[in-house]
Image (cartoon, rainbow, N blue to C red; front, top):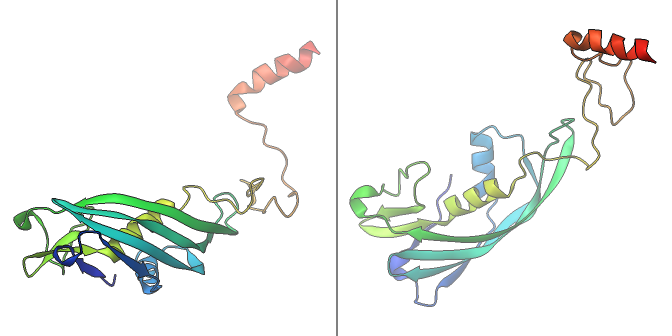
Length: 181
């Protein structure tokens, strides 16, 4: 992933605003992680970074649109991305932080470059993008999914499969209910 490093020490006290609209920020990791996701409307982040005594406050918004597979039928599901970004990035002690070339996974987005703390805005954007994706995207709210037997897309019509009789261990109880009527 391409890095967009911002020197925390060089930020003005009131902060500075950044716009990240380079699609490679998202396309690179999507390809690297073999994610079935394509960008439909360009993703862009407007981020304001305000330095504090022991880190920096990162606020902004990530917008755009992507297409991912529906969780029920695997057809295209359009997802609008409109996520607020608000997090605090603590400056780790230099001996506990990685260099700009090798940031640890899951660690702070602050790395050191020539003994200066740098915030990787691309990493912030990627993390926020991943958090903005729905856990179970749907092509439509009433998606019927796929037939578990033959795999027919039930949104396009019924399949020829017979209805599932359910758990065979319950057959005696179903027979009992049928005899009672």
